[in-house]
Length: 477
Image (cartoon, rainbow, N blue to C red; front, side, top):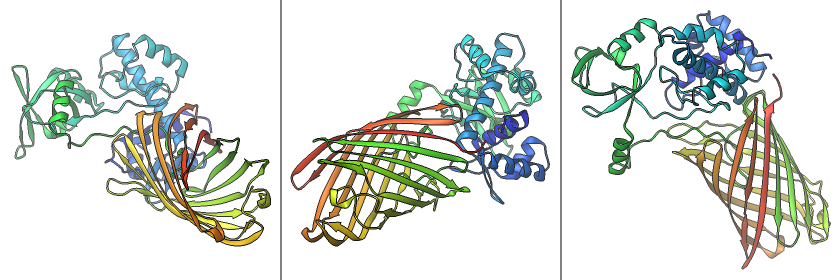
């Protein structure tokens, strides 16, 4: 689908609408979308279904709509064009900040991303438009803002106005008249619930405004004061930075299915001392929606003097629950193991089997925690020329720290109790520090990473290198 002005308007409205929802609320109600666009609910639903078929949104009847990764990228670039144009009109063309919204609404569909980048460069790569709204970068990423309204910020504490979340001309003129534009330093002296008013002091001037107006002014504390509060009260809640990379761990599975309309290609290569290696290719496809995902994994390996194809896995994963403030994401997986490898040469199990894994994922500030538990069962495996019933349980835990939205440090750990048949079980501990980075290319995303897994079993240690590459993109437009 070509990104027409209508498509862009819908994507932008969803982007802005979801951003205004309470934290962890994923779906924008259709009534809110229709109201934002000034169309009938039926008209909005028809268009959203078309966008869902194109892989730009995920639509759940009677629940709402959310953007896919492809839709989010396109929407962010529309917002970027709009906000850069607004700032250019104010700084360069001399427009008033209350005049630029309508002009930017028209120009955001006409200017090219190349021209916007030149304008952005000319303006000094600003982070916000004249109203304080954050400007996405050329990759669609937005620097997170930690802000409060005048209704929630501390009393009698110096704060700086960071953003005005209303484009109404009359309201903007009121804000300008009372010198409450972004960048102004103020203090909230009192809040009167009986009269629905807030008293603000700016230097020696005192202003009383209504709570509705106060809710539209976002403020930030000065850096020095914020640092002091963080040191004196480390338990204060902090706004986590959104992760630019998800579902790209190496050894510990993450609990996130592919979004509708997006498929992912994953290549992993594990090199072990002594010349042994294993390579795997996985392709993941959503089944109509994000709730259900089908994937397959082909492997090849070299063990001693033997090299060739390994067993094939066909995987189904169900997005049982999404992450919330109080609960992790959960997506159980069931895999069927097809014995395509040569077991007599050590390249496969020699029998069909199945694997169950229960992955959980939960964000904690700028870190993500992932933990798994499951097992692999091969009822009729070939071990040293005999048939054995093998059952191998495993547990895993990983922590991923976000240095930047597209740069993550990783520490993964896996423990499995490998069933060796008649000789019993071997406990194998694997620890793997690593790093991953990625970049967005149009409506696709590429991720590159490397890890250094070390395995310990029976007093011996194997140190290796793991290389990872992923490329995900829409299969329908």
